Length: 426
Figure 1 (cartoon, rainbow, N blue to C red):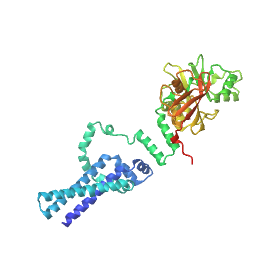
Figure 2: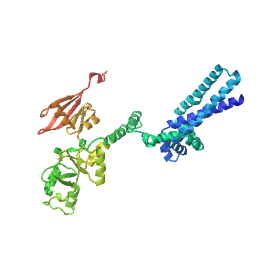
Figure 3: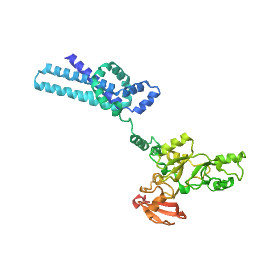
Figure 4: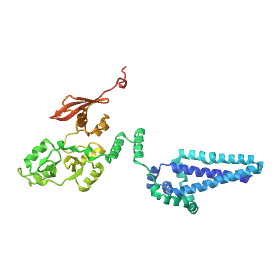
């Protein structure tokens, strides 16, 4: 009797340790463990090795755990029968009692405790578990032969494997980090922008054709300087017969350097210094264009529409700004696309994209067949605009405050605040 009780006690403790080990290793933060393993932590290296051999790990845990649970049930039932007889009622009570002991003492309780302290417990048991996996290896190989054959029939391990973490889960982790304060709001916004980087098309960030400052083929130094004084960009597209016939890109740096060393005289054409340009479709993804421009060493690309005409241009700086925020361009005035008048009023450049306006100012402008605020206003007005025209969209009222000819230049956006949102004054 004493021996039976001792065997049951040892089996319960062993089964509890196995259950706790399984729960801890499954629940541990794998990214944190891998980081520590790279820093040389031995127990973390053991955990990584275990998780990399999941089939062997689970096979070992199941075999040992089930063997111990069978011992608990068999010895417990035999002990009860030896004390109270072999009647059906006694056997039923013995089986029920053994089941309760296994479920409560050897499964639920140790697993619950281990999950709460998964980080600490997994490091304690990692190397003993790894040793057991080595000892049980041949037996586990035999018992897992059928599962391995089935996996092979279903397409192999790769066909059944899901990503460790998906993009959606990673974005959710960033949101949780912002809420808990472990990720700064600015860092979270930058990370979110990086995800959008691969989703947005070139036309979402290009400078439209009608806003490009062009240089005609054969323009002299003096003519170029007049254009540069008016619009101090760092690079200009060069055209021949018309704006769809772009023959190259002219860099201000090249012009100034040639003037400084005396290679260019006042009446000489500057367009001999132009470089080749990259032409891309407006539907190309921003991340793909970024890689292409980096590989080719281009700082600017011309965007081509479906009809083969020039739709606009995009710079490497503009693409980068989508991920890290506005950086500004050498020689240009600070970005005045957003001017905050008060807490609920803004003055905006009408060429501002709908995506930027909604992301930065939470204006809630609906999607449609337009890309800019000017396009949205034209869509709503359904006529030629004029200064003073107003458009209402949800809680935001837009008013055109500046135009050049038929082009909308600047818009005032005011968010209406309801009486419930106004804090009561004492």
